[in-house]
Length: 161
Image 1 (cartoon, one colour):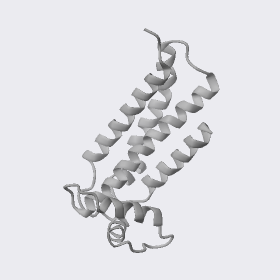
Image 2 (spheres, helix red, strand yellow; image 1 turned 180 degrees about the vertical axis):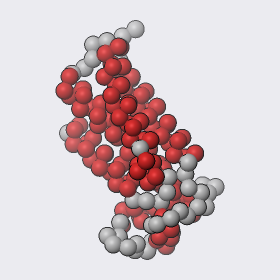
Image 3 (cartoon, one colour; image 1 turned 90 degrees about the vertical axis):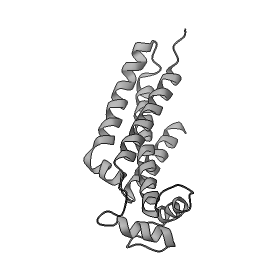
Image 4 (tube, one colour; image 1 turned 180 degrees about the horizontal axis):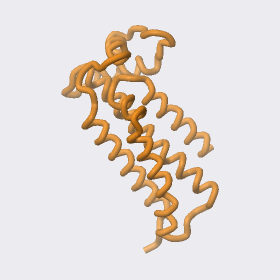
């Protein structure tokens, strides 16, 4: 059987995404938490304007999440927005770092080389996933998870371009 670098990378990427999604879902805030979370939940529900700078993208995406037919409260739906985008942010961090390694060193020639080439991005994405600041912002209604995902996606798209 021939070694497929792409299949291995996609499998590990799926593992990273699912692991972060499960961890963040299990630790997600079930209601309003401290600081800005209550404000972001309420303005997402009514399409209001939060404190400066306003974060219009988060409010609009949060409004879409409040309208999803999920068996959750409004607070849980907006918190789920942060959970999902933080998991996607961890995924993009893995994909960016593995893309940079592939650009630097080329395609691996063996399965062992492919695994070794993905060990660093895997470790880095798990360090990001379990870091205190990222985890705290991933499980409550906060704009940083969406911001991390958008920045990671833009970086990944720039690398592909």
